[in-house]
Image (cartoon, rainbow, N blue to C red; front, side, top):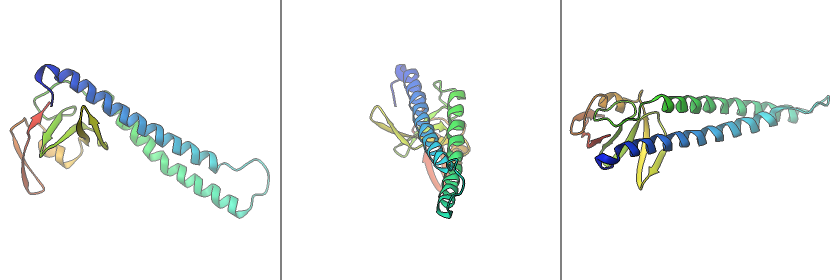
Length: 155
């Protein structure tokens, strides 16, 4: 994790990286949704054969399946934007925590991402691991899945 004087810049970079990650995921979900929705629309002529109707129905179902990820990524973006990413010594939403050689950002679940040569992953405030570490500080220990773990860092 960064030196104390660089922590504010680091936290802003984490915020920006997570926001960009979710915005890219949202754009991909919207692209898939719109593509399948477009392919679900039959042309204006009368009389379509069964294979065209079946294909249109499959594309409608696929478009509906991509509707949920669109809403999920929109909600994650809103959560990231609403979260206080200021420097902290206590685990809370917006904190970056390190333990067992891994680094996590408490706000929403994300895929792994890299920043300045380090790998991070977002975890949800609804996750069991967050519930176990909420309010703790670096050096505090907690139990997760029957294993004792010590928080190495909290920023």
